[in-house]
Length: 84
Image (cartoon, rainbow, N blue to C red; front, side):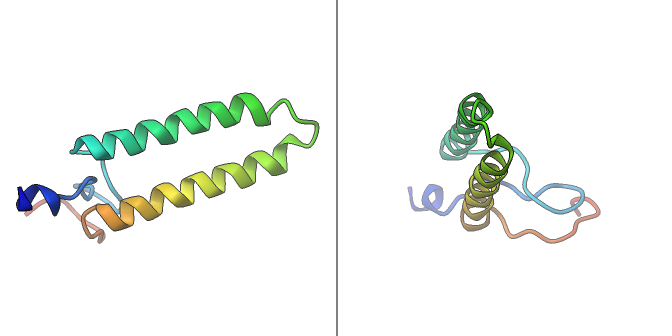
């Protein structure tokens, strides 16, 4: 049980830098919530008269939160040329 508690939600990518698709159910919930909120924001914020600044701010905030979660719950990222 303790091993599962420390398991990374998002693995580091095999090539390049960043994280791959989630490997735990918690990671999938985070990714699904992000996608639902992006779709919701696209539908709602694009109907406003001053839609572009609000939508850009909304996307920056959502993406920042996703990156923060990946940083905290994912594997450490470095540039990779492939697994050894």
